[in-house]
Image (cartoon, rainbow, N blue to C red):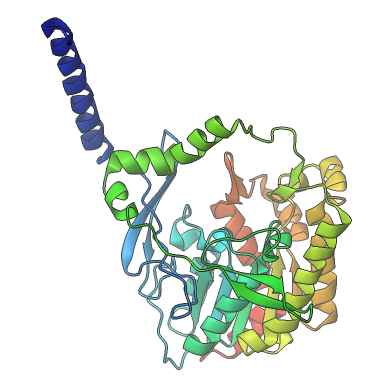
Amino acid sequence: MLSRRLRARLLAVGLGLVALLAASEVLLRFTPVATPMRPLPVNAEQPVFRFAPSRSYTFSQDWNFHLANRGWINAAGFVNDQEYVEASAQPLLAVVGDSFIEAAMVPYAETLQGRLAADVAGRGRVYSFAASGAPLSQYLVWAEFARERYAPSALVVSVVGNDFDESMARYSLYPGLHHFAPAADGALELARVDFRPSRLGPLVYSSALGRYLLLNLKARTLVGRMFSGAAELQDTWFVGNTPGAYTPERLRAGQQAVDAFLERLPAASGLAPERILIAVDGMRPELYDPPQLGRAETSFFGVMRRYLLERAGALGFEALDLQPPMIERFARERERFEFPTDYHWNGAGHGAVAGAVRDSRVWRAFLDRLAP
């Protein structure tokens, strides 16, 4: 049996630990600890990925709450300060994308959609449909959702480096999203990956300390890496947030995803190609350094972005290469378009993209539809 002295010591340690956890919980409630985005279930009854509606969220990263930002998830279930109106006489421009358009770490007024919405306030509407992890295949689902609910007059699709092969089910199966998978006849079809939220999530995330450990410190990832023995890919060549090296199979899968996406986008959106702008991100940080940019042109993203721009242009879409205007803007202003510790567009990046979109034919045609 334990001696009285040992029991007293264990009790003191236990009480000290409880006090430490309680103090941590109280202190963290006064800091911008991240909150979960809380995706809704995705299934046959509710097939479109969205977030739990009508609530605020807090975004931050790492132990020091880097990139802290507070935002709003509207009643439609998307990160946007506006409440979407289904029946409106004002023309609508829909903006579709992934975490770059979701932009949880950027104040809404600084985002692409926030800037464009301000440009047409009172005369037109700009709504965004986006979430982290979404590829080209999921963009079709949101384009169709926007068509059915809001009948847009024009569409902007943001494309980034990891949108290509991750559209294929054999390369990525993101819960709640749609990916391309081969049907029985070999043709590609959209396959939904159902998602059911964890029942324990609300309990764990009700604690500021729990959120800090899981969302800011990524405790599950760290523990999993520890037990699996996996190490971070320090030496892997990445361009556009995706591995730069590729096999013929990966290249072919990316091209198939592009072809399927472009073929289905007009019907999904209900818009003719000339009313759709496909904006392809520049290769960052390589575009700041010409020698590095030359090498990046041979990467998977470099090859795929050229393929998409050429195919989209040939099919009548307006294909916007964001790289040249970004290079020109950087040469003039010397301000980078991403955060020092995060690859997503910062406010300057969103501003550069908004400037390029404003120069597009699709935007000018959209403005022509607005009441004077």
